[in-house]
Image 1 (tube, helix red, strand yellow):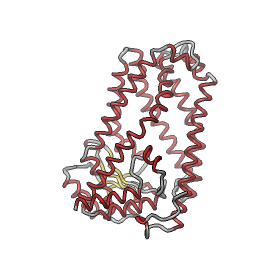
Image 2 (cartoon, rainbow, N blue to C red):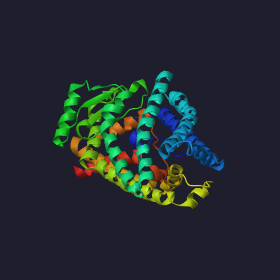
Image 3 (cartoon, rainbow, N blue to C red):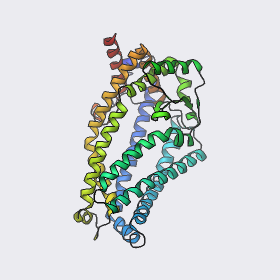
Length: 385
């Protein structure tokens, strides 16, 4: 309603036609996301009210051992959720994203990605869940050992993802622009950071969205640039964006967020252990007996809405980190205009919302709203100079 005028910071970068497309894309994608969320909630409530979960647990538990019954229980729920989510994925990819010129993926590739993703999830999550169930059946202090296993699993995924999982979906090759590559290496060395490689990926075969990121830990640490970013941004802007990402590493933002996540995980698992031991907890959901693997599922049902109230805390911390990284990018490159122009171009290319409601942005946004962010960049860099 209020986003009818082009912000002064975007004058000359976008016109009224682009601003209208941004508004339309924001509204359509947001409404679709709300519809999908409401459908998920309605489905969960229906499944619980219909007594499907107690019935499923009662059918599986006598036929299998505890661990096998638990794996089958979560396998059935995962498959149903995955199957019912397909229409939403199809509509988002081939209607909304296609309508606004983003989606370039073929149906065959979409289906292949979907099946690959499902297979990886089944293998990795199945293995993690099997360990959780074994610990749950083995020791009353399962929640602490499960936390240690979960923490180790996360670190393992950070290490393996760049070299084992990501290449299953995209082709990684060294950045072909030697001058850009040299500039990135020099910038890294100035901050004492070494990476395992600087790569570009064929993101354009799926979408025209642009991005760049750091990934991995230890020897698998690498810089990844979307080919769409390389085609649409000059080297100076790419360097500024990467300097921003580099600042997250040098300021240990990744480590701080990981530490916070581990504290929250430990708290959640300790609450889970307390709830799973309570017979009243099961009776609330229609059980006449206890089934600890079903208890794990219902713990998720209870804790997910409670996490809503902690969303602003995580969002505020993330926005603070982003502003620090923006400021450090200016210090490292000495070019505030390059970073500001990169964000303007990213906003235009991705049809990013320029007028989020302030309350919504405060509650949910992990990054400062774009107009505010560009103003902060120019103000912080002027102070630094």
